[in-house]
Length: 252
Length: 338
Image 1 (cartoon, each protein chain N blue to C red):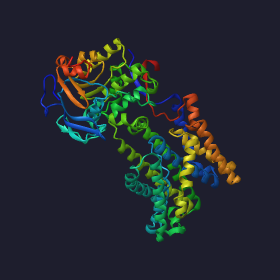
Image 2 (cartoon, chains in turn orange, purple; image 1 turned 90 degrees about the vertical axis):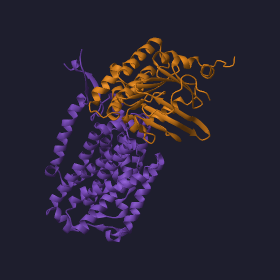
Image 3 (cartoon, each protein chain N blue to C red; image 1 turned 45 degrees about the vertical axis):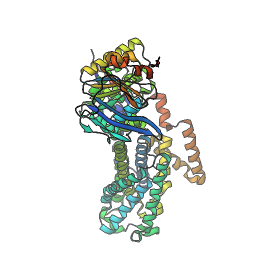
Image 4 (cartoon, chains in turn purple, blue; image 1 turned 135 degrees about the horizontal axis):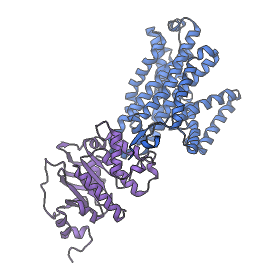
């Protein structure tokens, strides 16, 4: 399959994250098909693709929740392919889940404290957790049980927990879905501030206008393959992307 | 603007902890105020309090529903007899040694049973305990299937007078009973406790936030096995006699313990304490009824499980929100405190 937009080198050892020919199969179903991708430190990379394209699997492979059948994941120059999720989190890869996974029986503060305690090495976990709550706008709900939060706050909690691990690479999985315009603007402000503090981001999002307002680069995935990778304008203008992702008829 | 800070106590816990300390002091003085029979009863309560707290940590907090903890009780008992019969040591020294041995044995056992999940894990732990029982029945130097007794000479190494020996055993039981509750409480307030609560709620999110789940579970399993082994040594120091069927008795050291934890409230620190006390109250009043007594216990367990899956303490907390041993964190505004 052809790649639209500016092609990048397949392997970039200087990149913060480098995926090299990743494959993931479940039985006969190939969900990640020879996928290679590099993310430089300081970038915001947006990931687009239709439902079932393998975007969340890609995050699972990067975060270590699932292991690839073949290929390597290199983070900060180190091969982490065999490392588990916990090890990768401590190395600096943090993620939010598309379907929020709160610790329902714990308070909002305790949820975030888990990340601040186990996801990073420094000792001031309590203070750091509080800062992550304030950044994500959850400080006033610190003592509420996570199980009693409405959806928007659960998404905020996903972000707060991920930030509490002091990540260098933040993987955001559809964090803007279901937000109103003003909530979305608040979220974008938070993400810009996080990015300004030196965090690299990869963001899967169906809310395209939100993604385009911060992403410096777009990657489009379909059937587990990367079909486009380049500057947002170029990628969005490409015929193949329009046909696959936006449903336009490429031959029309 | 007021500053935020984190508190870990509640008004009730600030009263409960000194009261608990006072109660332990009072119990420590029991050899001076209690009869031998009362001393033995409190000692037995302490042993079950320890087993119940430990099993609750394993099943209620770590999700390791073992029905084979009698493996470590029996192992501890046999360590005591080995040390006393062959090394001639003071039997009290056998208690820490039983703990160390149980911990060392627990590591390979964990490697085996941790491959199993859920019900299979439970059955696996039971099978391990059976294997232990059958193995010790083969060791003829420890009495084989018919068991052996502690010679009085060994007991005299502990203390000359019978009263002093009774007191020493009682204090050891008190130390293990209260020590187990304190151990569970401090563990749950530590980093490990935070990790355990997170794992209980969501394993995927836990590992994504940096928690190495297998390591935490192994640590708890081995720690619980160690203290269970120490309790085992103490039980058979009190009984003076050991045989495989008594040492590895599932009904005495596992089933009754599960009963106590379930009626008291699994997954709470208070639950095993209440369950243990309630069990002994029932036994004092109903034991004369024989078989009927066991039927009443069973019916009671089923009733409580149906009416309140979190046990009697769960009923109390859901109505009042009380917590005698708070392990959580509350964020407070410092200005509120005045």
